[in-house]
Length: 132
Image 1 (tube, rainbow, N blue to C red):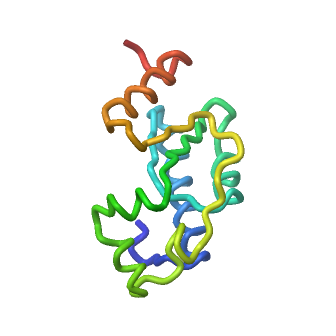
Image 2 (tube, helix red, strand yellow):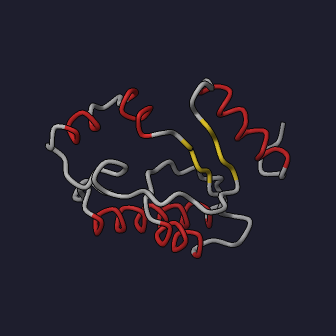
């Protein structure tokens, strides 16, 4: 769906727009949709939010320092960006605008993936999005 996009600001905007539109279609079909994307610009996250009813969009900020992202780097993209092979890489030579008031904030340093997922599940259950 986004294979034709790169890392430019324009491509980042289009990436989030496309993902939000597809998520909107899936929500309209009655599905609970979880979308995991780096969305560096507040305006794009706000535009995505506007496509949904108030209770249909939950912003989860996965807070991870850039040093930790570089250390983890499962696809080697940070290494490539640091060598100058990828330009406009979020957090390195392209900005990341931290969410001002996400519904959920997850600090991933020192927390297992399982515990982090559990926090999201608990939050969703407490608000009636998931059943036990």
